[in-house]
Length: 70
Image 1 (cartoon, helix red, strand yellow):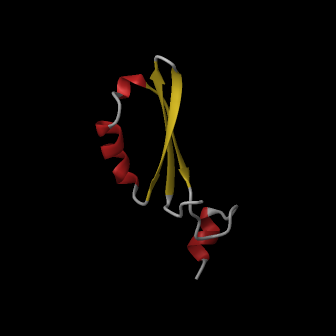
Image 2: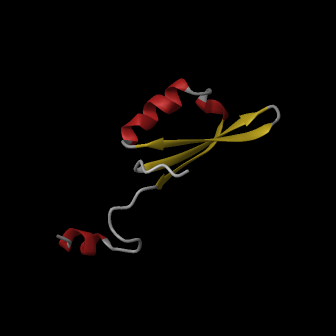
Image 3: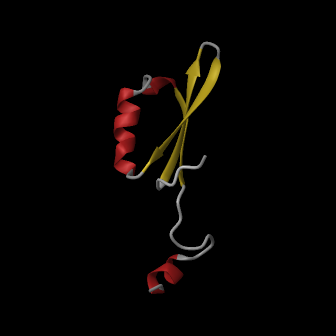
């Protein structure tokens, strides 16, 4: 099952048993603040990756192509 919200966020935290990744899907990037502030202590964060998930225009389009699109 895929999620069509705009952003995919993968956060990896350090645990005694080893690193553990948690994935969130967000419509608005400002929601990330709440996830990080209310999640495990950010001092145990190893990595946070934010990737554009849903695309309105074809993959590979440039900023100029999108600006000129109808």
